[in-house]
Image 1 (cartoon, protein in one colour):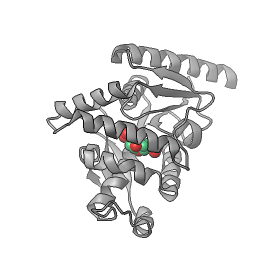
Image 2 (cartoon, protein in one colour):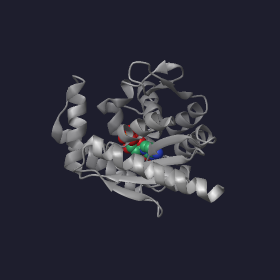
Image 3 (spheres, rainbow, N blue to C red):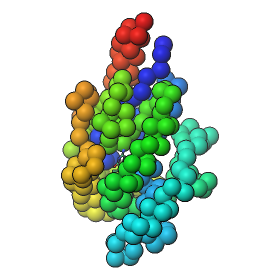
Length: 236
Ligand code: DC
């Protein structure tokens, strides 16, 4: 079977990465979390003061630093999933903190940040055999992906999932803050000028509000089988 490209887009905290990771593991593809790349740049900006305490972003400094930042993914033998590294340092935990979540939509709305990261994402997926999740994978990064999924779920359900995730890790979490963050990120992601979050015309929608992880995994593998078989027929 020829390898295809799988793009999974959708709203924040929809469980995209859980389903993308699980699919990649089952079919032996590489999983790439494009959101983690925007988060890594945001963490860098917070740590280096490029995002000032008053929220101001020094775009000139960010532009200078961006070309020198090295983001990579290295498999974690314990979790079986790739961890995000920034300049050789594992930042997988740090990029999930609320301080990063609350600034990442602003950083990812900057056109030159998107251009740089989209280029890296395209290069990471150039040999196919990737499952990449994000907001603009099916529309901008891989518009020719053989399988495109657009995931959605209602905001309350998504906030509760993120709340439970943080609690399970022992982090402090306030449900109302998280819900507010989810709604605000939806707004910024959908209204930004460059590559706003939208469903690609040829994407299949999955509303997983009332689905278990197992049901969603089964649904996804079925979509993969169909898309891979169609691709095989087309090219033979
Ligand atoms: O998937 P996530 O919540 O980790 O993504 C973090 C942020 O990055 C999200 O607010 C939107 C942005 N993002 C983006 O603009 N484009 C992508 N391809 C992936 C994420």
